[in-house]
Length: 275
Image (tube, rainbow, N blue to C red; front, side, top):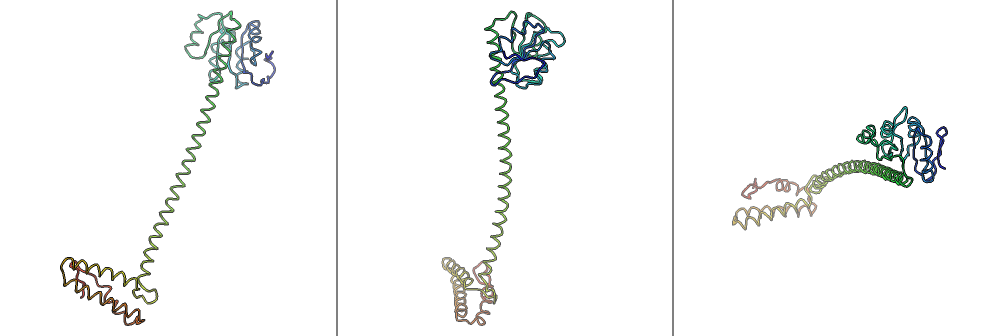
């Protein structure tokens, strides 16, 4: 029989649920323990305080069967303490007084799940205990899964915060690099327009200015402003002369012409200022 002596520590039998039986009537206590022993690990106690010690020592107690009327700590108070210590533990009263006010109060307070009346039948007792154990296991496994789910969600939230921080940091790095590249592009454009040694405008500068002047000629011709078109043609011709001087290697001669032509802005009528 898997009935444990209350004065010695117990070793849980593998796979068997733990059931605490408490009754000050030793004959009734032994009878319940004898019936449950093949299927459960039974911890017996003849008063409420001994039963509480079992509850404290064994966190996996599946259910408690308690007599309602006992000296010291009555069954209703015992089950209320059990509900505080082990909320998942299923609690039942074995009593010959189903109309007791203490029993009704315990039911209303939610401290017990089932009432077994004396004299009990063997099949009824086994069925009730099996149902209590099954419910306990379901609630225990559900609580475990819920805890695992909370931990997994917390882990995902922490990982999400890390990823967001990394993305924001990377975004700032990319923005800084983009701005730096833009500044370098401006500097490179400036370098391609003037020679680094002489400070003179390069061939690219002439090509850019030539495209602008040609565009002005086209606009003037379309608009019928032949005077402005002629002025632009003169400017284009001058640019060509300067470019030929530069290509011939006469930079000293080309320099003044460049200085005269390139800085000249164009007014709203398409006329070059200074011409």
